[in-house]
Length: 237
Ligand SMILES: [Zn+2]
Image (cartoon, rainbow, N blue to C red; front, top):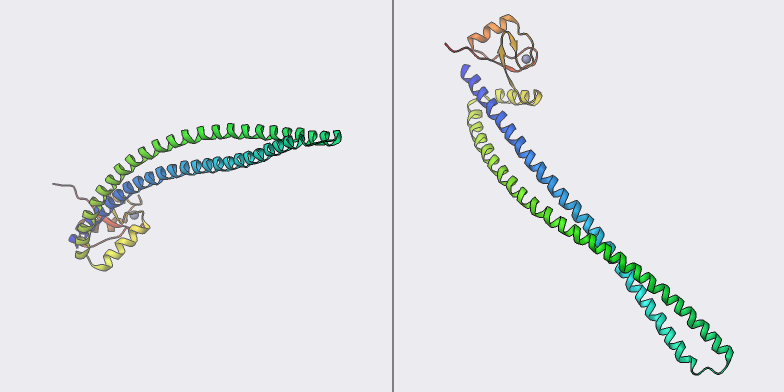
């Protein structure tokens, strides 16, 4: 029975180490996820700005087409003027030309506004692109380093799992199940040391009779309060 307890202690030690190593891996993984989210956010912002730029470019093109049409109208009306014979007609065409010129001037003003907007937006896009390149580069370096660290930790976990497998094979299946259930219920700690008459797992006092039987070490005993399997560390010498 003593041997089972020693094996359980070893199992607990290995499982605790595996939990810690996996927690370390999770920290790296969370950091990588965070870095990638940052890159994705910046990518999204850049894509939005590029879409706005494209939309404004399209509007500018439409304004330029409208301006071209207006200028063609003016030229045509000016050409027509030479063939006009009456004063009334002359005045009508003159009004048309004046209106077309006014319209063309407004379109030119709008085109200038779009040009200014495009320049400003392009400046923002250039800055954002640089920012993204820098972030991408540092993310790549950090991710690589963290991936290497995680791979190293995985090696540690794999070795521990092999060792664990050997120990589990030596223990009765029912005891391994009990141990696993306790670990699940007791925040990873299925075993607790009995010290100074108390269980160090839950800090409750143990019945004196139980405490005394622990000294014999010939049976597995559970704490009556937290059900953890009790281990008694005897002083050397
Ligand atoms: Zn306890």
